[in-house]
Length: 124
Image (cartoon, rainbow, N blue to C red; front, side):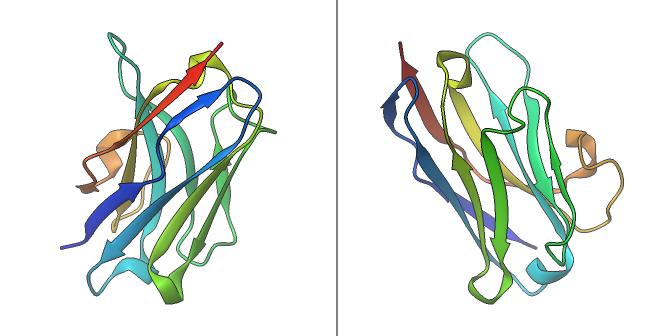
């Protein structure tokens, strides 16, 4: 199995920046698609961004394009999400997820492993 632990969530003012990290353990991290999802209070979990195993392909939700950047360092078993120009609507619990089998990278059903989440709160 792949174990994922998120960190970096905090309170930040609108327009500011922060960086989320996801540290993975397991033998298959370098060969899996990994991504970020988020869930705001009272709302469904939604796709944020994903990156291919080799780091050559990235995918973003329309709501974060141009503001967030996903990257990975396979040597460090780390997934990152750089969040710039954050908005109050970015407030959510952010989850790191891994998909060994591929498929639809924008759908949560394609991911087998999940972290516990890290809270991001953006004040207006």
